Image (tube, rainbow, N blue to C red; front, top):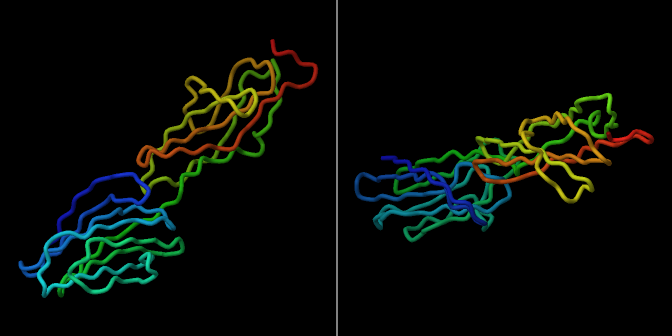
Length: 217
């Protein structure tokens, strides 16, 4: 019998995910819980629960990663309560398998990467301000990573010195269309908030310069 339960907890060692239950002929039942969406290279904790009988020993094996001991499989035993897993970045597939007695059930794991905030197009990165030009467009690449099913929220910011930033009202699209006067060179960047993991990343900066001899108003 297999049952599933989904939950999410963010922490240093991640404890979230599905619960996989194996019922060995009605006599032994064991479960393993842990995240299905992982970032390679990070240590994840998978908890083993249930009450297996002495005749239904437990073993956990990893495909596309390894235990922190360096082994692909844990030792066979009835007293295990958790395993620590590091997933490999080069793996084409990732899976954690729980063996209880003669039954084995598997949990497929998907990989992601740390959130990356995007890159401003080289042709847009530095532009010259002029009163004649009404709107300045800064194109930025799509953010990637942060979750296996990412949900991105964007916010553009501006700065007079590249250090102190403030949000630009209404600038919440992938690209920035800036309209307004500036009194000196102005920097822009985009914040990405990935809502599933609540992680944040920044794009590189762009700049709007005032050309020599051109007044700001």
